[in-house]
Structure formats: C-alpha cells, structure tokens
Length: 115
Length: 113
Image 1: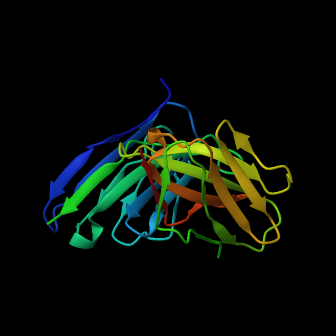
Image 2: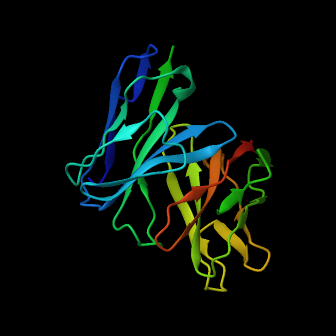
C-alpha cells in the first residue's frame, strides 16, 4: 500500500530532551516536506527536500533540523524542544519538486507535547 | 509572498443541505493550482478537489464543486447534499510552479442531523 508513515504518533517529552520524528514513504517520491499545524494558523511548512541531500527551510524552521540521506526517509529532529513546539506535525511527499498539479500525500500526523 | 485566507473559522450545515466554504488568495502569478483538503477527526489530510488557474471550467468531484473566480482571486468550495461524514476541518491551499504549498488557516465544518 502506497503510504507515508510517521513515528511516533504521540509523544510527550520535556524541555531540552532531544527527539526525532521519523517519516518514510514507499512511493519513490522526490519531494518531501514537514509541516506543523496549530489552531487558527493552518499548516505551516518547517523544512522541505527536493531530493536526496537537498533540503531547504520553509516558513518556520527555527528549532528544527532535517536530513535526507535516503530518498524514502526524511526525519525531523528537535535538538532542544521547547513548549512552543507543542503542535501537530505532518510529513508529506509528492512525486516531483515541480509537479504543481500533483497533490501531496500526508502521513497520519504526530502529536507532540513539550512540558 | 503568497497568502491564503479562509474568513470563516467555523461553519455548520444541516444534513442534506448545501454549504459553501470561502477561500481567497493573494498572488502575482498567472499560472498556479488551488486545492481543497479535508481533515476529519482522524487528522488524516485528504485531497477533496483541485483546480488549475488557466482552466476556466470549475472543477467538480461528485458532491463537491468549486467556484473559481480568477480575477477576484477567490476559490470557494460547495458541498451539496451534505452528509455527516463531511464534518471536518477544510483547508484551502495554493501552489505555483517550483514553489511550495501555502495553506489557509482552515474552516471547521459541522453537519447537523
């Protein structure tokens, strides 16, 4: 089944404790992206990747890191989480970086609470 | 920078009735694409419908249709014969060539039995 998977789905952590949210897609997509969703703000892009070893900042990259060593994986790293990073996070992928018509395929979301 | 606005944070509709969700956007591009996504309580993001800016004909998908007004930069979603399963958060999104998706803040739709 074609899908985007994220782990964990729920995470409670404390301020300053490094964490990684994994994202994997099995559709051989070139483009991958991370979003955070907050009430009243919709989805805001954190980082995106056009292909392996190519990543770039989105609208809200502060406090986050990403890497794209393999085409299928795009982990999101919070080196020192803070309470303002409490949010719902989505990973998404699409076939090509410039396929404007193409929709994005979203993972199931990760609910993060930073105490 | 492109922006997407959804002026209705919440809407409600009676089952079997029709409801229209509003979306406006700001862009200087002439060629772009617009999308409506649905997010039910499961939180999964589901594509509802999409529209190419250079196509004048409004897109339709079963009970879902859009009213695309390019000059007004408006892209509203009409849901006909509303069903309980239509209750969700709806996001309008914009994308142009080589650029990333820009999402609106969302409209929460309730369907009343």
